[in-house]
Length: 412
RNA sequence: GGGGAGAUACCAAAGUGGCCAACUGGGGCAGACUGUAAAUCUGUUGUCUGAAGACUUCGUAGGUUCGAAUCCUGCUCUCCCCA
Image (tube, rainbow, N blue to C red):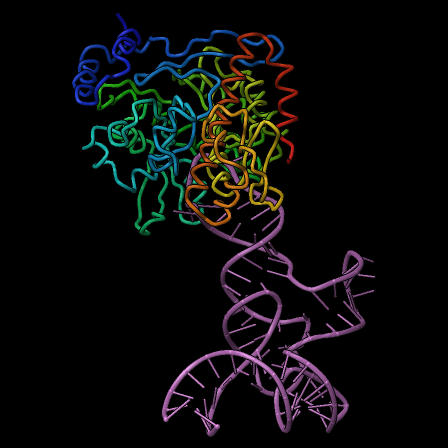
């Protein structure tokens, strides 16, 4: 009996009340089976590099390719978990180490028994390490060999993140998938800076791996960590970084530092370079990407996992993604369009409310507008990757992708 | 009936002789957003024009002046107080 078998029969935990007991049991008995197959590929596409697979976690299986809604502060803004499960059907969501560490703080999350219990979400959670915040809060931080010193955006207090502390925090959070602590280089960025930054990320990666090996999960459920490939837009650096990440022999790998302003074609090229090296039998996660078209292009190049704030944030700001293309629901043309937001949506919410009503809500700044738009967009993203998976399985992905990318990129 | 205040662009509201096609806010219109310091931010909002520029506008009709949203006179309307 191995850990994956055990987690299968234990899942889903029927009651939150007794799940802590069961998770402790797993920890005591089976936690160190590192050879367990976490990822299995069901089918590879012939025309492209796309694959359909399943990533197994203690909190459930994740069919791939997958899009993970971003729930930075332990909430996908404006969406009830009920709707995440039914309307959107997200098998996994993201949270953020930086944000949760600052608020509510790791003490409170550990007291609750980890992020799943704290937020009442029994499906998998992936936590970003805070590496992206080191990048996006550039004005308020300082990088050293030791780690990143930064100031809280909440109260201005000073903090230090190191590879070790970031793993510890992610242990305390209890994420199913933890991310290595990295520096996301900006764009544009010269070769010299990109190389220095990448080398620092690699040294940090070694320390992350060591910290993962020297510690264990706190709540019984398995935790895996993914290293992050960096190297900006330089193929030589990307190859070195992909080799480095692959050699860390973690159960999955991530591609970071893309979609930070560079043209999409450059991003696609980098994905191809990296995916030639990253192991075929482990999931590949393209961080922070992207538009629906970006995602299909990524899948075609062998990426299995994606996340992006775009469907949620842009939804709140009135941008809708649909099969017919991109809609700015605030535009006057929708004022008297009483047809559903998306008649063919998997989400009942998108089929129920009209464009004119949603426009009114968004323009009026009503919170229901942000909720409906977010649910619609996420439902669209998840439907898109579900269909991509089905197309890979039935062998029609390539043609479908070409046709779909064109359509969904248009402005309606 | 007596006294006082006021009328500025879609709305509110600055502006009291040239730097005013007119501050600012709201509203309208459009744009941005890619590991979320974002229910945020940006542009635009008299007409014509690609632009330079031209033309018309600050209740209304006259007047003063080189020049008026700004000063003077009549008229119209609104608000407040007293009776």
